[in-house]
Length: 239
Image (tube, rainbow, N blue to C red; front, side, top):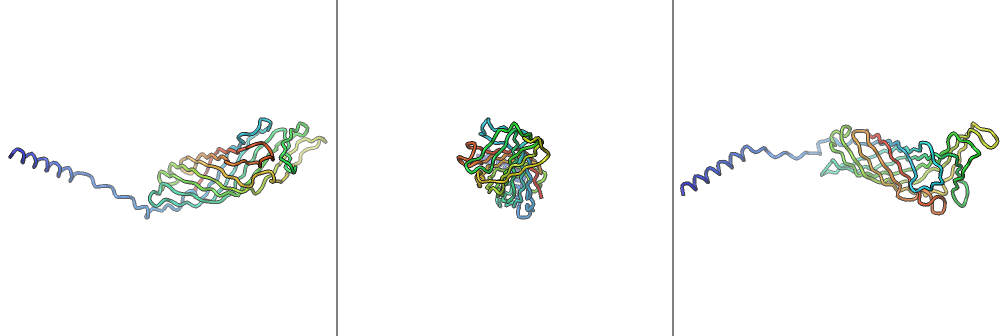
């Protein structure tokens, strides 16, 4: 019996000693005292631009590009400020370049992409511009040091087309004249609504982005079937 009591005393003493030496539990971070108000309020994006599912007959060429600029508001989650929702407004512009092609925007029935071996162009491009509302679910590894942190985001952009035009710089036409530009505006054959998925991943103020349009750029019956724009490039964010 004495041996049992002695053993219990020794075990109790051991447990008490270890309990006293155990580190105190970490205090939960009080995020209400941390300034998280400045996080990616301005986003500037520049990237390559292409049409997925375009017919092989479309003779695109050169460096087609997209340029976007958004002003954003950031709303951190109260329970987990590493996550936040970004909501804003801005402008998106896409430039698709063509070779030996003339695009007729003014035809009433449809959009025509005509092969042109007579006129020589220094540049020929189709431009589509949108007023857009981007929405992002954001993750920032260190929300206290946003400019020195890994970050990622998934989102959507909803936009309405505000302009569509072709612009050509002619070096020589059928009359052997050149050195002039032609600009034609008309968006009747394009869908006014744009809905696109977006993704970003990067570090600090730099990140890579991707954007894929979910709906058709060109209206049914007005041109190539089911053209879906894709942009991939660089985002600079801050303020």
